[in-house]
Amino acid sequence: MTRPAPISHDLYPQVFGYTLVELLYLGARTAVYRAVKTDRGYPVVIKLLRREYPSFNELVQFCNQYTVTKNLAISGIARPLSLESVGRGYALIMEDHGEISLEQYIKQSGLEIPEVLT
Image (cartoon, rainbow, N blue to C red; front, side, top):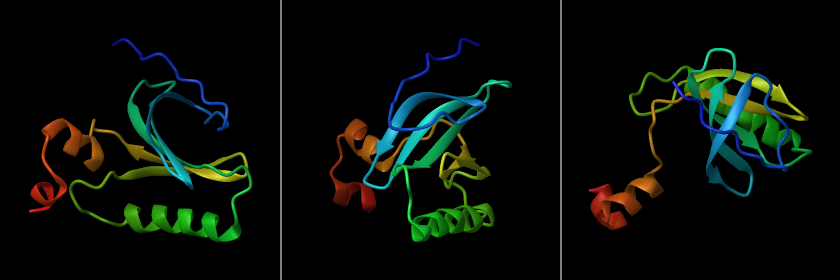
């Protein structure tokens, strides 16, 4: 298996043990990357807080997201594998089965939002 080339993104600290390979989403508060577990080569999705100094509320919300999704057994929701400290924030490490975002699906399918939601 050929490993994808890592991406460089100066705004984020390195997530120890993972190689970031693709930026999937960049929002005001979070960034989501497709990555590879360095020692085992299996794919993961990593969600990071964007701010270097996240607020207490942001940290609590991020931890709560991990706790809630860890206990959900719903197909289509990426299962969290771990919550790891990164810099002054956290990285939410999730399974990656090659899913795409709703935004990507709409672009690829050529459908309009109302059609996708029905």
